[in-house]
Each structure stands twice: as C-alpha cells, then as structure tokens.
Length: 46
Image 1 (cartoon, helix red, strand yellow):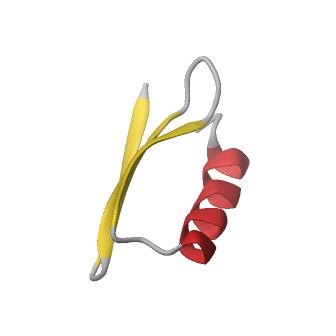
Image 2 (cartoon, one colour):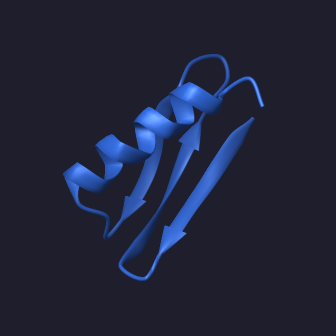
C-alpha cells in the first residue's frame, strides 16, 4: 500500500507497507518531506 502527496511545488510517493519509506520525490524540499513523513506515521492506521 502507498500514498501520493502533491502540492504546488512537487509530489512524492511513500510506501506504507511493510514499513514507511519514501519511494519517489519530485521537487519537494527535505523539510517538507520530513513534515509529510510525520503525518504519514501518525495516520498510517487510517
């Protein structure tokens, strides 16, 4: 299972199974990715 994240600056794909990992990043800054990763971890069970 995975999730896609998109904003005006770029997009990313995170695998959430079997563990959370960043698959691809197109244009998002490291700080943005870190914030997104925090949200993904908190909401993984949803």
